[in-house]
Length: 247
Image 1 (cartoon, one colour):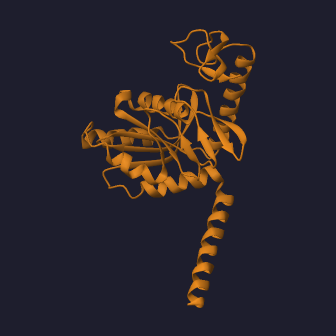
Image 2 (cartoon, helix red, strand yellow; image 1 turned 90 degrees about the horizontal axis):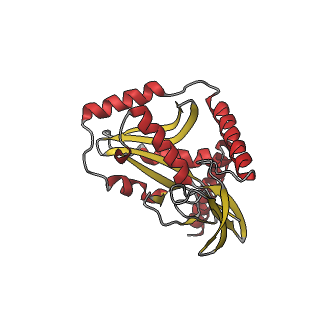
Image 3 (cartoon, helix red, strand yellow; image 1 turned 30 degrees about the vertical axis):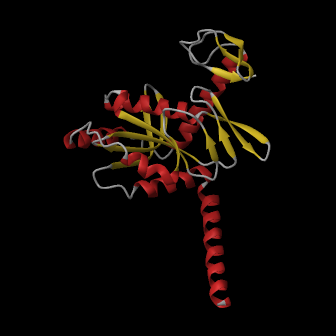
């Protein structure tokens, strides 16, 4: 019996070491995306799966973790790999990650994925109602968010996709959209480096605007407001623009 326990312990340790090495080699984000990609590979053949997609939309670089084209709609999936507690509102610019009392800000993944949905609608020439955005947390984080967009754990991904069974496209349309997306892919070997550079430039521009009291979404004036949980910074064009920042 002791030998069996020792063998099981040894196998478990090998698994944990292999997973840690895989994470270190790939990076936390890439490792999470790989886990989601492997889960999506189990979908039936009628689902066309695209992973780690780079596109150009209206002159800007766009990176989308996963796109699934099906008769039941197009699933645009943003993958996150966090630990601790993660919480935020659907309209907020940033969410909060809390790890043992230490708090960090992260860009709202729902808003991030919303821009991806817009790019897909533009490239494939489809209505937004036919796209299903999903945010998947593939790490160990406990997530608290009330939103219309599904914000789920990896174990829930197949169930959420399976819930959508209303036919929106026929097979010919699915094939055409898959072909259009394939032809739109940016395949240059420097695509990741260029994308990161563009994103950093966009972040710098957003920080410059907010530092000068200008809303980065609509260029309205930023003002201090009173909310349920105290003061916050919001756009003067509310409710048309719902941009907010914590004070």
